[in-house]
Amino acid sequence: MFRNPSALLWLLPAVAAALGLHAWAAARRRALTETLGDPATIARLVPPETAGRRRLKAALLSSGLALLVLALAGPQWGVELVETKAPLRHVVIALDLSLSMMTEDVKPNRLEKAKRELSMLLDDLRGNRVGVVAFAGEAAVFCPITTDVDAAKQILEALEVKALPRPGTAIAKAVDLASGALERYPGGRAIVLITDGEDTSGSPTALNDAARRAGRSGIQIFPIGIGTPEGEPIPLRDADGATAGYKKDAKGNTVVSRLGESALSEAAALTGGTYYRATLGESEASEIAEKIAALEKAEGMVGKAQRYKNKFMIPLALAFLLLLVEMLIPETAARSARRREESLEVVHAKETFHHAIH
Image (cartoon, rainbow, N blue to C red; front, side, top):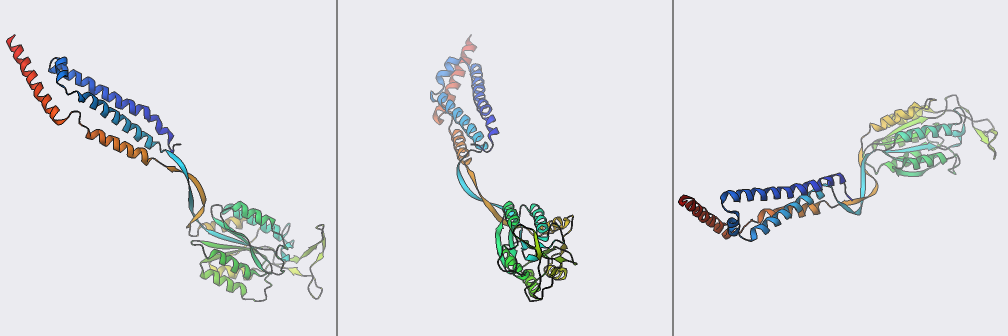
């Protein structure tokens, strides 16, 4: 297997050029010999090892060029497991699964609206690491931080109200859990918090305290408020999904769930993030993705892959060795070369004398 197989097209032309150059040099030598005197006489004066050395040098040169072309083609064999890295940002999506998310002041209800928003957002976050946290009266990690956006989308789609056993809405717990998951990663980090903002944890400062802790760690919070300030009653469904009534408080009054924006907006401001209210056009998902894209990237491993090992150094080293040997091999031994020069001088003198007599 070759990384650049098209380079092999130069293999035959390179070898042919080397052999052609050798043949041209031999022809030139014969022509020069003929000008010096009788070719048969000259041939007897040439050391016998010269022809063999020339053929060896031609073979070494041709082989070296062939190996150079082979190295350019990039031979590969054997498999190695390597880590693939890319510049990444890290985002945790925190989704409210409290009963109030079944309110239908946005259609079909707050939870389904939130899922649509988050699906669009995740598509825009491809190429980053994402995780999923869900919360009601408690918070839990449903998808660890991963580069597999499709897996995160499937997990989000499967989440339902009652996925967590403890009722209520503890937004601060979700922020703390998401922050803890993000703290081990470098670079830009963000929490996308999607909720109706009704915090039933009992502490009016719990969310702000959690936001401050996240802000000190360099984590930005982008809340998306789901619902309307006017609100609606929270429907209760029977086994067939039909409305069986509405949630009531301890005094028997129907509970009206309203969007609580002020706490969400303040939490975003404490971390340098931005609060958004969910709209019909769902443009807030794209705006949040753009703000996250402006965060600092950090180099991170995105997976492991198998790749062939590059072996171009082997033919390259052999080519260098053969070409070096070719350069170091003389066509004749030093003494033989000197004797040949002396013999040529004698032959030339005799021929000159012969022509002078005649």
